[in-house]
Picture 1 (tube, one colour):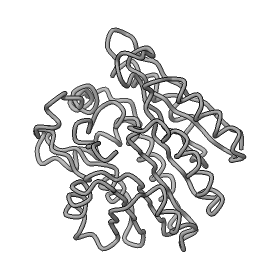
Picture 2 (cartoon, rainbow, N blue to C red; picture 1 turned 90 degrees about the vertical axis):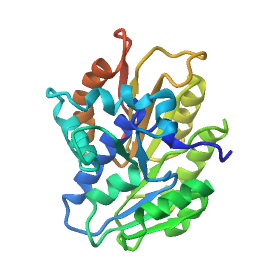
Picture 3 (tube, helix red, strand yellow; picture 1 turned 90 degrees about the horizontal axis):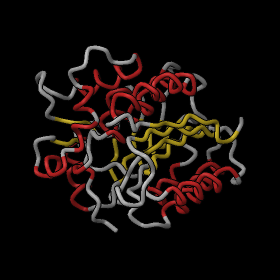
Picture 4 (cartoon, rainbow, N blue to C red; picture 1 turned 60 degrees about the horizontal axis):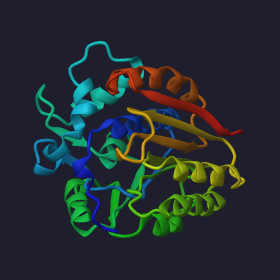
Length: 280
């Protein structure tokens, strides 16, 4: 249950999609000059060295940020993402990859608050060391899906909640839906960003149907795949489900995802989905 470490996967194509959506959403929310609350339920260790033993084991980053790093023909919304990653590297060589907590911290202001949850003991310790100088941030070694509910609704009445489980346990596809329903009941105007992998498509279809029947309105889905669905090849795609998304996001991703599918997939096997899963 607590064996997952994101260092093995940092910067891969799934992170590319997740962090492009996160950046575009946070920039939209920060266009309004009012405080914002950011909650990360599965924050990881915060910062990843791409020359570490873990990152080099499968070198997944080479098919994600590594492919985009030196390109000079990046699609417009990908530029923001790559430039932000460059802010965390000390030379033109790609050596570090920022996790969602650092990306959010970079984009948020001095009056915003960040609450980061990480249950894995070693990961939580690394995360705390990574952000301990930032007074806006509080780190909890706890189950973010359960414990973050107590923060809602935040005093700012504006917030983004990122839910990014490992899905090592099959029932997490149901657990995240239950958590979203409970969170949305307390804070219906919040923006919720749920990441998911595609390992067995039936699990994803179950989760989508559960969200569609949840009573929650205004849900969009963005998915990026690098090979066709398969039960034999592990994760073949990943996606983001957004509740109360920026009104600009759907059109932005309709342009961005075809470009990413062509750029990151091998042998022209890329595919994508852009859907309004539940109407406003």
